[in-house]
Length: 81
Image (cartoon, rainbow, N blue to C red; front, side, top):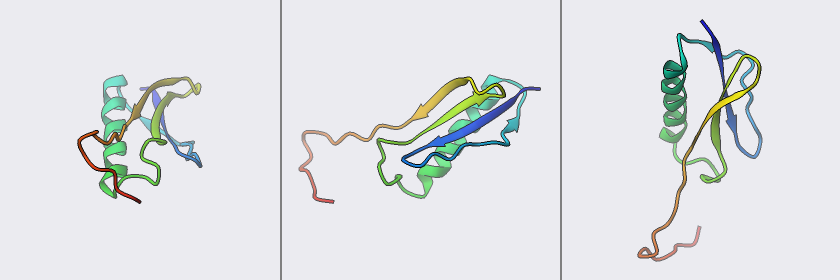
């Protein structure tokens, strides 16, 4: 079974050197989505538009990226942070 690496990219990247052995890409997608969901469950990252989870193979090739985009609607008044 292949090993997949789950890199959390932010202003300071957290590169996964251990990874997970999973049966296929579908399982890697599910694991990546759970990781991203877990991160979001603690609240949005400091810059919600500048983080992502990149899933790579053992060779370091990025297979897919999970991102979120936070966009304020024009109908909502802007708030100061």
